[in-house]
Structure formats: C-alpha cells, structure tokens
Image (cartoon, rainbow, N blue to C red):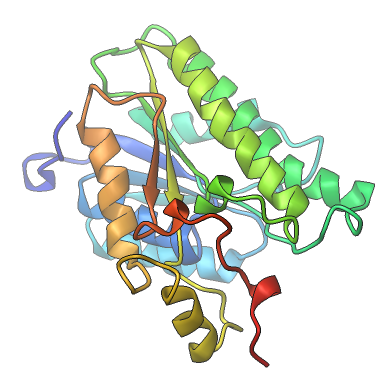
Length: 268
C-alpha cells in the first residue's frame, strides 16, 4: 500500500479509517494525519462531544469525509460489533482501525483496587480486543492485498516496570502482546502493528521544568512531535511487509533501565 493521492480520488473511492479516541490529543493528531493522506475518518469519542465536532470540522477542511461516533468503552455492555457495523454502513470502504482511546491513572499495585483495575483493562485492552475481533469479522473475505490494517497505540512505558502506574502499564503490556497474537491470527488479510509513543503530547498540567527533566533521559534530548507519530502510523500502513511489530517512537528513551515519569519527578 502506498500513501493515497487524495487529489485523484472522489468520495466514493477514498478508503476510511476508524480512529478511537480521535477527538483530542494524540488520537486527533493521528486522525488529521490520515485525513491528509487521503482517508475518510470515522471519529470515535466518549465524552468529548464538543471536541469531537471541532475535530470533525477540521478533518473536513482537510478534504476528508468525517462522521463522529460515540461509545463508552468502559461500559461492559458496549456493543463493539454494532459500532463497527455503524461505521461500515457510513463508510463501506473502511479498512483501517486505529485503537488510540485510553485511560491513564496513576496508582501503585498497593493502591490499585478492583474498580481501577477494571477501568484500565476495559478501555486499554478489552475494547481494542473486541473491536479488532469485530473489525476482522466484518472485513472477512475482502481485499487482502495488505490494504486492511489495525494499528494499536501503546506506550513506550511497556519497556519499563513503573509500578507507580501498575494497572495502566499492565493493560498496555497486554495490548502489546495482543498485537502480536492478532497479527499471527489475522494474517494475511489484516496486518496488525503497534506504535509506542514516548513524550510527545504531555498532559496539560506538566510544567516546563518537568518536560526538561524528562528530556534529559531521552537520548535525542528532546520530546517528540505529533507529526512523528503521524509518520509512524503512515509507515506501518505503507509497508506491506510489516506485521506484528511494535514501533517505539520515543527518541530512544526505552533504551534506558527505568524510565522517568511524573511520580518519580523530584521537582515541586
């Protein structure tokens, strides 16, 4: 598969991608990158209705057809097969699923109760698994020429054992293993890969001092840019000989032994 030249495609020819958690932050950046590459976008969100509508307008301005789809992934009764069906009814050429939605809560093992554990795994692992299953079933028998792809957005923290984020980290480590297992099962009709970002879009409450402290532990001595995550997603979609891989986009931070995080920050 090569990057799509959207100038040569009309609305009936453009492929489509479902991006979960696509209203804000990294999911939004990924959706924008795909729109620029010629995809129509099914934009999933949970509670960020206003942000989802703003992002959809932005994607339409980039030339993409875009529709928003609400679903609470923490709800154990959520209908993931129904979500895929709704998306395909709107975008029959759906051939990419990007699992970007996540929750991120700080808690050690000792501080992790059943509710927190269930929340992290429901959104970060259970939802991607069930979406991948539904996506694979829906496109079974369609074009298998490397056009069908699943990209799981993981986290470079899977290289570490940061117990301060125990449940979150375990859910992402499980997602990384799921990526490899699914790649083996869904081949050759679907390629499945993961992208593991490092410090790219820090949370709003992070101070400049904290960001500089994090950068000191990154071999390239800077944080990443959203465009570099867009490029990573583009790379795994374009290269038809990549499947079952986790691509770390973190400036080499995962080469370290421990990794820095807000819980270990020595500043005020």
